[in-house]
Length: 133
Image (cartoon, rainbow, N blue to C red; front, side, top):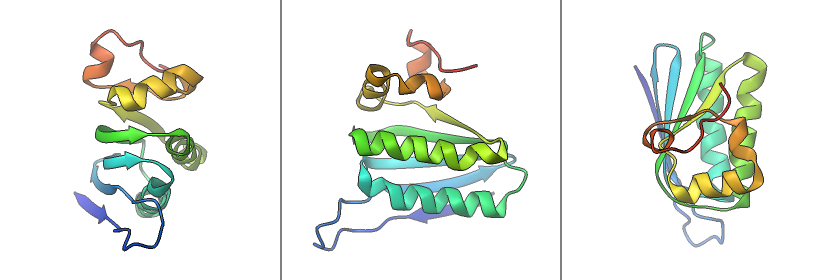
């Protein structure tokens, strides 16, 4: 099992605060956990973690983005999710959203992006339509 943690404090530089991003690889599945806000500040740590995992694990089949601890998401955060999916697609790696809270799921539903991602976990079981099969 491989683990990676990325957390960058703002240090008063005016950058958006980066969330905490950690990853664990279990077989052919990378489990990436995001804690904090999913905004432009999430781009760097998420892309860094995904790049590291894709370079280290050529047998990767799936990335599970665990989002239960995300407290806020804006349009830049949605763009980050799409970027992560586009990074994984050339290798045939599926990106699934696990336990997305309403602050993540609702904006994705409103603009139709939720169709791009399989949705796993409690939210999917609570009557929210699943993403693509």
